Image (cartoon, rainbow, N blue to C red; front, side):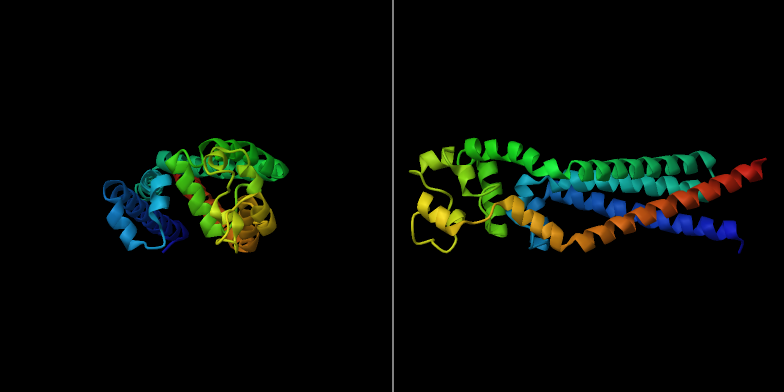
Length: 242
């Protein structure tokens, strides 16, 4: 078996697996969209709140469709020895890499502004919609209960909010951890001093930074390898044609 044949077989098998994985992911997305209740019974760690507020079905269908398209392009391009399909496959992977790199650079450059930007977006929603809008209320309650946090920065995010005014100057119970038997007023919330959810999320990311970095490095390596293989096949076919 020559080098070209070996690379071609690897390209076909690899992209066939990507295509099948994409189809499975899209099928799971359709399942969630059509019959979300039965799907969530199969995955007990996911709660009803998560299903309600994060459109898992659309997300899975979209990612699955992209994976299926890429898999078909790479598989057919290698099998049919089509330079057009191979260069399309290479171009799409290259665009994805550029987008990922740009997103990473923007995240690094503006990392110091992340908290300011998120606070400006999250705090008004807490003050105006928490306790009034069911979706916002359930989402924040689920987040605060799971992460054992209070508000975005701390309990003061709820000061003079709709919830605060409607409940007699009281804060959500999660803001008074350890003092559940007492009203969660200013004194008890200040005494509990529960951290905001932003700090808790940052701590989780920092604890798992090696895992996140490893996944990012693995994905990048696969993308670079896919581009290298597709370009090798393209150049070989182009040289063969001449």
